[in-house]
Length: 89
Image 1: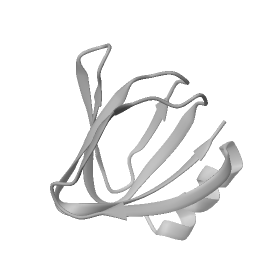
Image 2: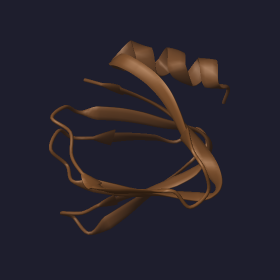
Image 3: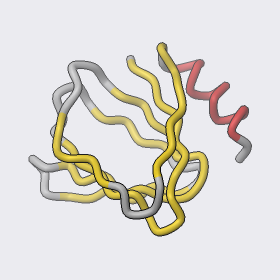
């Protein structure tokens, strides 16, 4: 699915939408947000670790994830890097 189509979907359900990207193998340390996050993977792949639940969510191009406010999570970018868009609810 094209980035603009995914952004249109995201903007219909969230606010303060923006995009970001990371290189292969980049990591995000465990953290949380005070808002519900809606995220689409546009290109590549990324795996989010839900720290308190002990489970992973693997996203590839076109996949969507919703993280409830306060969910502690970390992330590992896949071997081809990733491009994502996200917003808050």
